[in-house]
Length: 185
Length: 287
Image (cartoon, rainbow over all chains, first blue to last red; front, side, top):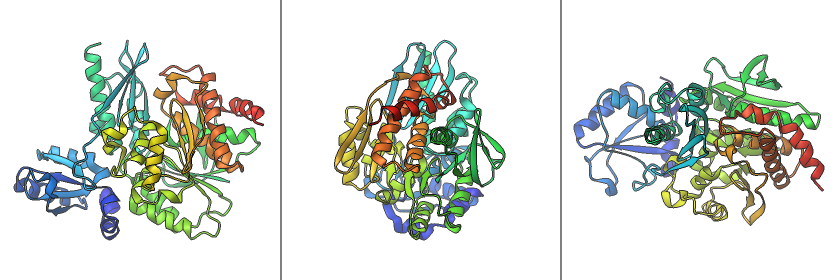
């Protein structure tokens, strides 16, 4: 699997790089879920590690799964397909960190823009057609724009279904917020 | 010569290294057309349009197809680590690449071995990796937007998605966030911060800023940041000093945007088409 080769090569250097190397942890309610997740993720070739949780987040079970953070969306999708649901997903760099949950909505008159984290989604109000996607820096952003721009919100694929990175995840949140905004237009 | 490294959302494009030209709304690399809609092709299109004003067209691109799983990015990283960079490439821009600290470090170490290292510019995913690696100071220019600046300023965030709310808050002033980014060594030698006002800054503070002409719809248009990075890279590539190039590029990008009379539905190629005239106007005004 492609992702396997990317992360398998770098065990030593990633660990050496420590907290800044872009690692995340999956927190589960029960150890059995950790084991199921570990088995599934390893069978798919992901370079993950089962570890003890940091003290700040010992609200779940006593094990967490460490994983490459940039692949969060892919890994969560795989787990969801197997009906394995983590309680929390947090970066190793700071257990108290949370994903961005601030949305900024800008009304351009005929157009409406929603921003989530570093991603912006703009639609034409009358048709609910997606007219632009901007922001982000991961390679699935141009891909998502190619798949979504020109389609209505109901026609468009969901970024959470076809995106692969945290930028894709952020666009997914913007997409869902836009759906909410449009429901009251 | 200018070198540009990035990806395109087409998995059928294998690693391709070579000269690029602009033909209508596509870039051509090794005879293969790639649509200019946003991302690295938009950056390349803007750079080529800028170079053309100076009678230049030489630009080497390092491209591969990638849709977010990192396939093409890894091919590019591997190439850069295992092949020597052509010495005529004196300005190198890193753009839409899967953020990967390990590969980033290997590329940077390879470049550090060069006798005459090129000017290094980073934006988008590669800038994320540069910050995560703790090696941001090795770069000459970052071109973040306001949200990405907040990420650079947040010493704990491994990706813009995890930027803490109190830093991301819009009440924060750009100069304060820049100062914080430098305090934690998460900024390049120069920063060109794209936004409602563009800021050119370094560790000493504000060097210049541009707030007009202002076209509100530009914020919604995918690729306007890419064009700004393309313009500034081309100007640096022809020998302008970074602060002057950044100031001129900010003005050129805004003027090109204004000339396109954009709405939030405008596509980036409409703005790229206006770049040559904007370059000529701004350079005529220059002292």
